[in-house]
Every structure is written in structure tokens, then in C-alpha cells.
Image (cartoon, rainbow, N blue to C red; front, side, top):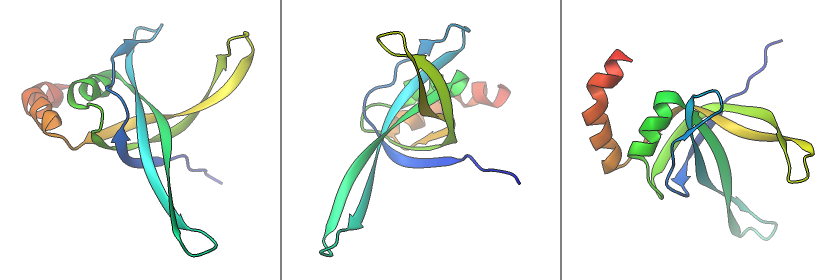
Length: 125
């Protein structure tokens, strides 16, 4: 039987993304995205909470995110959940999870300008 690992997020970016370079030389950025959820409690009153998601974006998509996204931008992310091993401050390995963003769409004036400027470059990539 096949399995499914797919994530869709629509939320706001919590901080300006920064372009970084991995040990492999590949460029990436980490997006911190807030989503809201609501539900009715036992008394029938609506409750709300925010969840924060860590999304890693790689390569040319990362560059576009850095150029077109700023804190507060509304973004739509399509990706998968990835699990990786990391060492804590005491050197103990622990498993962590993040979302690997394969496709990021953003809805800002800044983003429209970036896409218009880079459209010829993206068509040849």
C-alpha cells in the first residue's frame, strides 16, 4: 500500500527570510509561518490558536522567497514533512521535523515586482 506525505499551508511569515548556504553549497532559507485554527469548546464558544511551522525552501525557490517575502507576507506552501537528526547543546542526537517547501506562492506587491523582473530568468531555469 502506498503512503502519502503532503502538506499545504496558508499563513503569514513571522520574520524576513534570509538566504543561507548549506555545507553542500546549496542555498536555502527557513520560513517561519503562522497559521490560525478555531474550534468550539464544550460550552459552544469559539476558541482560536496560532501554530508556527518551520519550512525549509531550497535553491532558486529560496532566492525568490528572500527577494519577494517580508515579515507579515501571506504565503501558500506545498511540501512534505521531513525528519532529520540534529545534536542538542549537550551533543545528544535528537530527531526533529520540519516542512520541506517544494512550492511557495506569495501574495504581495513586492512579490509581483520580483516575478515581473525575473520572469525571463525563470523561464530558462
